[in-house]
Length: 294
Image (cartoon, rainbow, N blue to C red; front, side, top):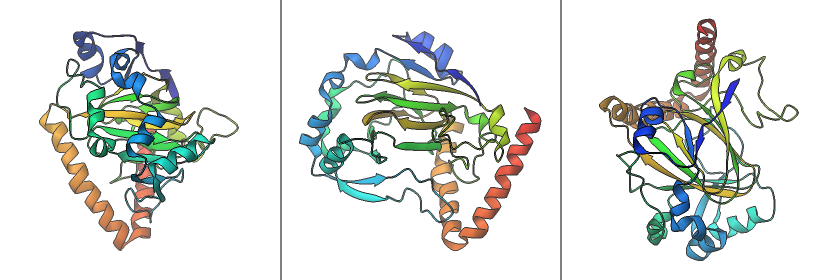
């Protein structure tokens, strides 16, 4: 892979942000944006446990999905308090995916400010909390609604690998899915990496970015960006989503949610093995083409 660091700024003006990152669709880390929020000092495990500790949450492990895996099927369930206790004791490869903590503790919405000076179109009903134990992994994917994302890290540190959407075939996108066939786990560690360049040779030509997020860092992920995340410590982050201003962008999100996903779900139920075999064949055909064009 051909990686470069994500640009980092302490602060940025709306004009510079839009001109150099938003419209060109390039990622950026803003160090100070969240540091003015009450959440920066206020949000921690103990506070969340007090607010929503009894709420049951769905947990996900590090196993990549296969032809038989239903969309977003949970691997276990615990109360939020039990989960916090578990990941506080040491490495635990379990994460919480798309937990809308604000439904259960709406007072938390007063602890941050929607950064509308940078972009418009925020989906204010859907701020989301992402939580993971140390060693937990969010496998390579892009968000199905293709929204712009401001992802702010609070507790713990997280390593993030990013690719522009146009690199999708070099990273072996599965047809009718938002997932990569390749396993990027521990990609930065030669001894423990699961990346297989012999099986997936186009990965060597894929151009992307990487960054380690710390407490208070806000990562701008442009619409459609692929991302793979590994929790270096137990921690949590909040994502604020904003729809693309263009009609094409909005329609792409609608198609992904209600067209593409529905077809994939139906085929996984009715003909999982033939469907998987066709997708796998198509993955390698598109990657070979992308490799020739690189």
